[in-house]
Length: 360
Image 1 (tube, rainbow, N blue to C red):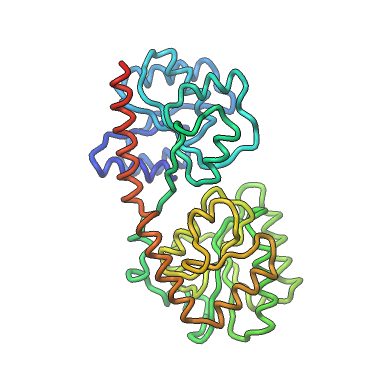
Image 2 (tube, rainbow, N blue to C red):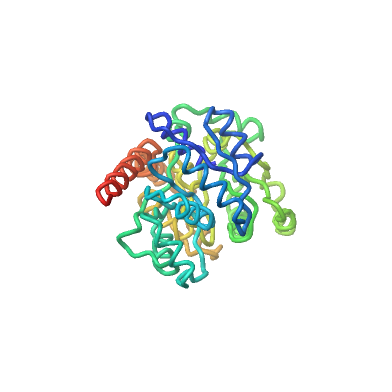
């Protein structure tokens, strides 16, 4: 979906952008509704020569100036297709997720040698690229993910709708987490902190937003069982999937982001854009987003006692919550706004096209 949003932004700036995607995928369906040209290719985990030849024909027949891949696995189709077509256009890769597999063998060197530039969504991903691939520093550039700050704008969002839906009183503080149900997202620490805090404050409610991905229903059930075991079912609200995230965030007084490892953390950026103070784990991509004491309070990851202490501090300090929230939106506007992201991406594309032309 991030690829789709990027193409929409590029098209809105007068760039002619098309998508290569799997047929009948959610991406193709959404792109088609937006009037975006889609080329369909059934590439499996191990691409067949037939698919590579199909891709070669697509690339040869459409006069592209540049290719931008959103997944490193697709390079195994793209690079051979480019070689067969004889096209010397720039190839860019955005790396969204870290890998712990060494990719410095002969075949990977052949694949990555064709990548002109890799874009890392965070500092931890940039380091991961350096550690695991043949790419050198001059061929890796940091380009953070971004969000629509007008969509996530507290001045344009109803902050009472969701509170009314869940019967949250005006004098109650609502503390929330938005995340899919998946191991490592920190739901356990969040619930244990909720248990501790509920013993000290009578006016707290905790909102858990999200649903399990495929094969993660057991984990989700375990989290709900944990809430029951801790005796806080009356304090915790499980909303399931929601498509009204701005309104959800507007209802909160405090946002918690307890993930153990995150390549970036768009959910945190969305909350910060809504002027929410936050308590976040001190790990990985979070460190590119949150500034301890300025936009958020950081706690030691997996340490629910530290999480509890940091939340307690903000419960007791409304002025600190206010200043963190104001600073948070300011940071998002300056660093993680999709318009700025698109400006930078177009500049990167233009630079790569010029460099490629000079080589010819």
